[in-house]
Length: 71
Figure (cartoon, rainbow, N blue to C red):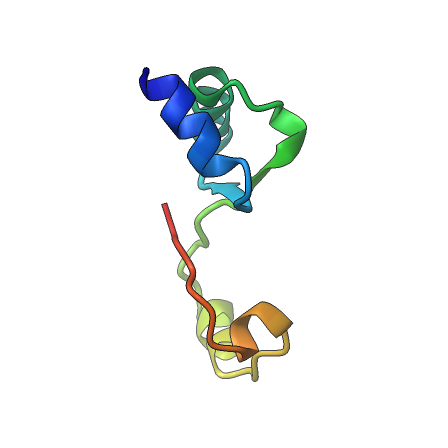
């Protein structure tokens, strides 16, 4: 039953995972093709990260107030 519920929940969402292993598990559990799952690795904390954190945000999804679910 759980795979069916997961598949239905994730159908209309952008699917982001923090590693290829998590993406593989989600693909198997939810029956989603890997092509529909995007992997965004966690950043390494370096001095360059702190410089980038000071830059302005230009991604439209971050400029409007919409619900966002991070898993």
